[in-house]
Amino acid sequence: MAYISELLGRSVSDIDGNTIGPLSDLIGSIRADAAHPQIVAIVVRQGRQELMIPFSDVAVLVAPAIALNKPLKDIVPYQTSEGDLRLSRDVLDKQIIDTNGMRVVRVNDLELARVNNLFYVANLDIGSIGLLRRLGLAKTVQGVAQRMGRTLRSGAIAWSDTELLPGDQPMRLKVASDKISELHPADLAEIISDMTRTESSKLLDTLDIKTVADALEEVEPDFQASLVEGMADEKVADVLEEMAPDAAADLLAELPEERSEDLLNLMEDEEAQDVRELLTYPVDSAGGLMTTEYIAVPPDITAEQAMNVLRETAHEAETIFYVYVTDKEEHLLGVFSLQNLVLTKPQTPIKDFMHHRVVSVNLTASQDTVAQIVAKYNLLAVPVVDENHCLHGIVTADDALDKIIPTAWKKRIPRLYR
Image (cartoon, rainbow, N blue to C red; front, side, top):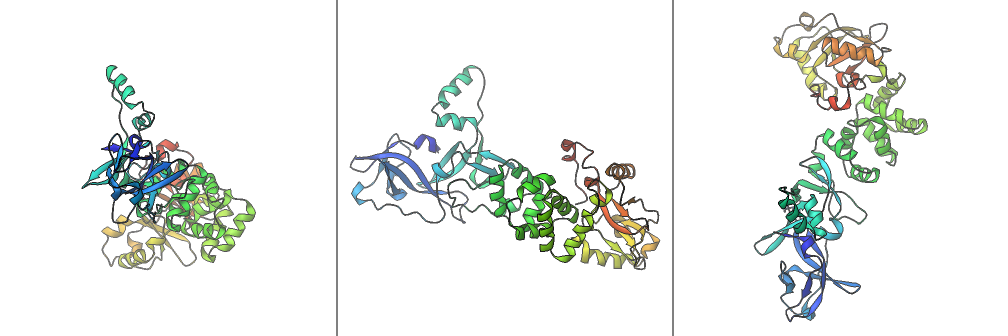
């Protein structure tokens, strides 16, 4: 194994022993069919100029002096192509996403591995030893630590478990990979929270609309507003349409009124109407907390027919643990759980197994009241009704308890209703 920090600055000589200059960088080629970048060229500094030498012209890389296998005059300079990356300039000291540890870390060194006479970037050193190695202090500090009975731990992670973030230099590595999109929205939100606003904005620009919407739903509305501040209105409107109506309303409430109205006008009419209704209620009331994405069925169908309704509409609901029963005027008549439905014979009328006494809250109920109801009756969601007992939406347990349970505790609560 070798580290790039140990190679930088070493003298490079041709086959005749003529010194060309010190090594200033290595070029790695990133290909879709390879998990790790292959070293395809070295960069040698010649005064104020640089010479890119194909790696096929390198006889020995890991040595006190780097030797070439041909004279300098016979070397054809390497021409960079798409997928090439200057490892020292573009990777060292850069922030990366550790997609395995779900965090943002900084690269202190690069570990190279030799396979069949070719060199690849094997691991990224994110530990203190990597930084000490670059300063030339690693052996000294490790020796002192050993005499004190301590061990300095390295912090290496595989290149294949990371994604580069866009930096000041143009990056040739595609950031919007499947690995990032496949992260759990909560993990992606935590990663975004670790970045600067510029970095997070650049990362969000590379992700599809659905992924952005899912990630935004996992952060606080004021942070959401800062993330979409520089985003084009058309894209923000698309993101809002993908978000749950209550989350979209919370975000719009944090934006300037004029921009909020512009975004609502850009949204599809149906989604905009749901959000506009939620914006009419105080943010800390049941009406302001509720989502209009729930499942309701009429009272005159069977369990089998209700199951068919779920198959057709469940993807639009915030939770399917509860199914509400309403008449044509949206009066709330009953409720049953998914478990009730699954355990009931197909031809059983839902009126025979639904719960007729439904715990509900009024549109104007405070968040404290909603939270107390959720906790008292151990609910995953509570329906929200008006003075005529017409169903307007539901408040999920996480939204009800959002301002009551400390943030550290909320992160430990399983989100079973998702």
